[in-house]
Length: 391
Image (cartoon, rainbow, N blue to C red; front, side, top):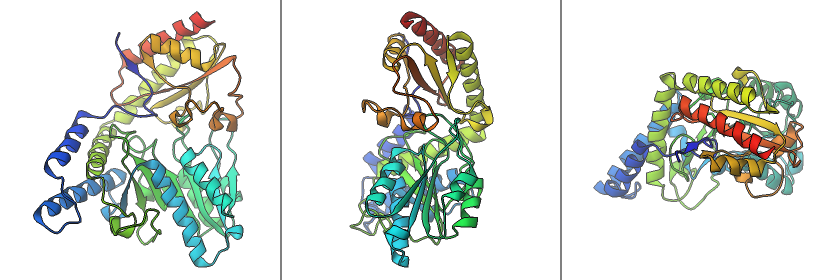
């Protein structure tokens, strides 16, 4: 049975060229990039090239020195929020008077860090979103004041594919809270949408390798030049003193290679091709599956090109996913980080869905640059058959 993999928002298949780049580092450039001898210097050269590639993928104006390699998007998110909190403390702002603002549909990497800061005394405000999962600049700005230390907003929601108006949010925040750090989780948008810092209006941006055909365990945080974030991980002067510990050379080089390939695909109309595939998938699911409807934005411009999410009244999510897998289609009901938790999706709850009900299924189908028209059509047909079987 052929496999149709449509869970790319959870992770993507590593590109063979990225794997080759990793293997080359492990085999030929295994030195410590901090060592002053020839072997270390060669490792450092490859690390610098990886940093340059990530910077170039973010935008032509990005200085490679602004890129900090991390273990992934989760660490990058935590580094930004905890760094902003530490800067506020250094200014003399007491935690009880210092605000952290996040939206209700942020990734748990952001929400759990915010909750932890709340337990340390910081004022945490969770901004609600509308029924399509899009947060408004006015709502975010209204949650801010002169002592807001950080505002975190997800560029693309990982469950709904909703695209946030990040630039407008950043502008509204700066008008009300000029000292707030604006952090953007771009893990789901990097490689498909324009993530240039100047366009987003961000102070920090988190990205991850395994969403763009790279390996797990590799990511980066872009930090605006002049912003001195305290290190989250201490113990060395690596990454310009911003993250201690010998760098994951293979992961960093792989992220650089994956970022360069993603940027080239986007420049070559890859995002437009994927958006057309998404629209084809939506048309076939809504036209061929009983009681199916979109969740999140309905306007294609408000939805990321690689994610389509649905509510299907009738079968529960888990039996439907198993029925799809039996037909060779691999998908999910939402974020992989929630799988097996038993708790309903906080994203679906935030947009007014009762995700705990057993008489409906929630399905996220996410594409990659490897996805074909035949796979989209096959998945829609398999979904229609699975729903009919479970009815």
